[in-house]
Length: 344
Ligand SMILES: [Zn+2]
Ligand SMILES: [Zn+2]
Image 1: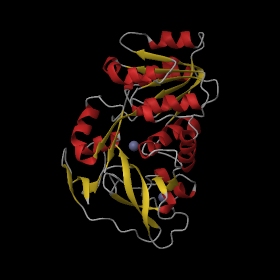
Image 2 (image 1 turned 30 degrees about the vertical axis):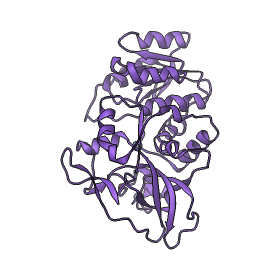
Image 3 (image 1 turned 180 degrees about the horizontal axis):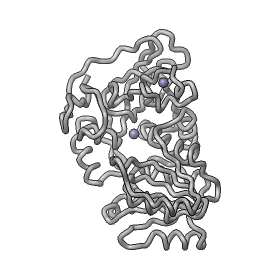
Image 4 (image 1 turned 60 degrees about the horizontal axis):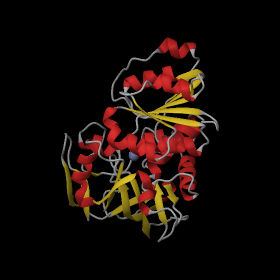
């Protein structure tokens, strides 16, 4: 089968090449991949900025149909439409696994960097990580359940958004836009999305089309002033950072009210950043760090999309055959993409 493979260590070394079809073992299923989303992680692996074990097929945001089941598969059958949590090779035995935190098990190696992923016609997965997708969710939308589950886990389950909250989001990439949709679905009273001049043409335009309450271009408007206007002088209840940019994280402390919360979604890719510690202390702020997804965040995400409370279609700007991966990756790096999916 023709798959997109990171062939060896170093920047580049990504090739569409023939790979053997996977064979499902006991407890596993074989999935015919219909769609696989392109994530920041895939771009980081391309440039050698994320751990990976080559040769490895990229892609963890897959959606597909089960075409074969291995021995001892009990809850899934051929023909089921599925997506899957990328927590493969979690040990199931350590304290984290036993306390329901398999997503941060030290043994975990996900499809797309640790083991073969979904940028190929077929992928094998353990049944214990799968979730069924109802008929009214399209394949393209299903491929976005994984990034959506990240934002649901971080914002609803960890930072505990309340109905009526005023929310700010820094970073209008796909995760920032999904975060805005989650906040609206969770009953936020006002959502402010903040980006820079380079986001104006595509991402901030999309945010305005999506009906986000306040869309701020940092080069034109002062976000602190806008936050005070939106909240009648009170300040933001929950500031979400989906950028990983140090100035945006510092801005979150400025934006929140006393006893406000900060939800960190973006990685900074640095050892240290400057943080206004005393200001956060005087505000008695809560700061939530996050990584990956929980079982419940996948089920919540599927329900939010299936019920129409979250519309994913407007976020999919590119759906292209796998053979066009190179131009799609390039467009993502040039910020010309909202969210891209590949069709193996
Ligand atoms: Zn992802
Ligand atoms: Zn474990």
